[in-house]
View (cartoon, rainbow, N blue to C red):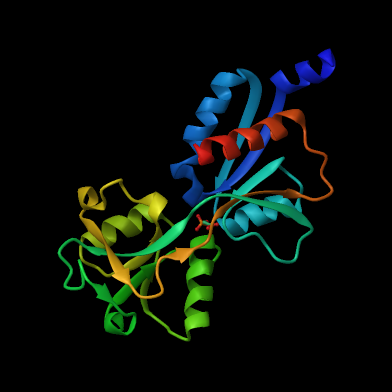
Length: 213
Ligand code: PGA
C-alpha cells in the first residue's frame, strides 16, 4: 500500500491536448500540480490530427480532445461542454436576434485548418444540415481567427472556450443562429489496452471533479 501511495504522489504524467483545450486545461492542471508536486507533467499541445498521431504511437498517458477517432480501440470519457458558436464582429446586423444559416449565406467565413477538431466538427455539422459556407480563409489559430473576425474580415465558428468571458472585450459577438451552437463535449481519451499509471488515474479524477464543481 505504501508503494501504491508513493506511486500516486510521484512519477510522470504525459498528456497531449488539442489547441482549443489550452484555454481551460492548464488551470485544471495547475491545481493538480499543486496537489501532487512530485509528479512530473509533460504537456503536448497540437491540433487534433497531431493528437491522434501521438495516440497511434502510444506516446502519452492521456489525450484531451472533443472528436475522438472512430477507428481506434480507445476509452472515451466526456467531462466538459464544448459549444462551437458562430461569431461576428461587434455590431453585426444579425446580432441580438435569432437568424438562420441561410441568412448568412452571403458572408465570408474564416475557419480552422483541416486537421483541427473544431474544423472537423463544423464540416460534419454542415454536411448533416446539407449546407455549405463560403470559406474565405483557413487559419491554424483560434486567436488569429478571433482578431480577423473583429477586424471585419468575416464570420467564424469557434469554441466558446477560445473567447473572452465577455466576447465584446475582443470586438466580437456571438450570433444566435439556428442549429447552433454545435455541441461536442471535451473528452479524456486513452488507449483501451493501456494500463493507466496512478498519476494518470489521479489526473482523470481531478478533471472529472473540477469540471463538475
Ligand atoms: P482543435 O481541437 O484545436 O484541433 O480544433 C478541438 C477539438 O478537438 O475539438
